[in-house]
Length: 389
Image (cartoon, rainbow, N blue to C red):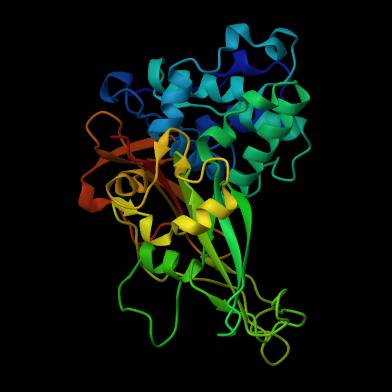
């Protein structure tokens, strides 16, 4: 079996930090045997943990196995050979991500070492650079932010793929519940992932699903107790707020709020919450229908006047049969946090692109799984891809 050897990664040492060299060289002391390349189907590659960097590896695994992301990079939408920034020796995050796809889907190596991602965090002064445990959802957002900023610095903001792949839009509505008024004002908000609260309380079903979380997210919320909240038309204080989806991204990333941060242990004052991890099971279905959580036609028309009938680029979204297709997603990645609130380990479960088999990616180790072995109720980050018909 192949082993990680001391100094195996010397070819990567140019421009990298001493901490990174040390972490890579020390892998030989902790690494377990890896599968040989011939045992691994194309795309099933482990990602080396360079020192508490599992939060990086699991997010990269989620991105690697979403069909829209894979299709973008493997069809040469970004060409490293023609990249002006790369030819000038400048940082290009699109080139870095493209190289990771190349390693995963064409390299004989049984693992990927994401040293360039970590180095980019150091180069850009990110608070996530280093060798301490970080939050995988926060890293996903930071990666997209740095990616977009880097593209803008290189003068190619319009070619950055983050919006093409991950961006959708919500409509935030303020609704007057005064029967004599009923005024409604709408404002759109772009998103690249959606954070969902896990419902709790007496009226919550015994077995929760992502649909229950989305229903809570898109439910009307009374603002009667919020200071200054009133109808802009009749000035009544009987207003409610509601979020609904108006455009849907090719890749939908859902974040379950499993970490609740309070003030101290148990709270020092009445009403204060203690920090805790929420382990409530929430079923993530293989197929997700977003149609019940989308805004109706009049609302879409009011916020998308130039093209009111489209939920996403190239996919019509009229109510009816076309809407059904446009709003359906398939699950391709589940990131799970193992451990306690302030410590633990991230692992990812991914769906292979050829025969839809699942596998577990635990750092550099890759293990094939049956579909019923995937812990769909323990997800922290979920990667869904729009179904293409």
